[in-house]
Image 1 (cartoon, helix red, strand yellow):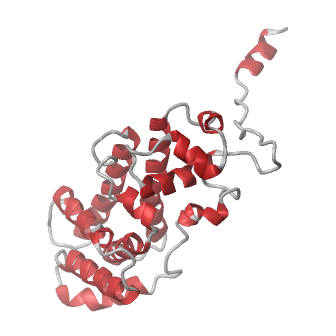
Image 2: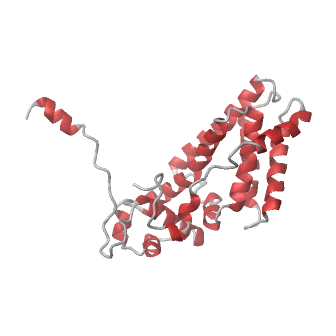
Length: 254
């Protein structure tokens, strides 16, 4: 075999890992299925209290099908954390693509976070607020949180540069804006939609209004932020629905 052909063979892309086949005719268990089931199990009990066996039982499969994709339980925890929290960054990118400006974008981001965290399924809310994910046990999560805060800092810097926001510290202010976005997650489970709407408006008005050089611009900013369409892109949490197990989404299935 020539050196050229040997090099070509060695640099070929690794074969994509497929799910383990099941003997009853159902689709193979894939990563997306496991992540969706783990969300439900973690939300029902707790991350530390849940076992791989419980996740396998939720899927109606053997634990071997889980370990085929995730050698350790910690690998499942990391995948769930990334799946849940990475969607914040994707949504920020989505809003920035409108090019509506820092004040309008920030207003809508805070508002959307309140509505999202207040109306997300109970398992997702439990995971979102889990102290087990916020204590540094998932390195990937720390990186995601830093990336999200940097998005906020970028909006704040842009607003200051444009003369729309007061000259504030992007670092401290980003932390405050992030806290406002979590208000909905701390609200009552299955809160009334109208109440969440008002809570979202209050949080966004407080956050953006405190930054504006000209506070009287706030009503115009609010109207423009709420006019962004569509109201919110699908955040892929539909895979937490047990009825969709066996129908992996393209973003999660491998």
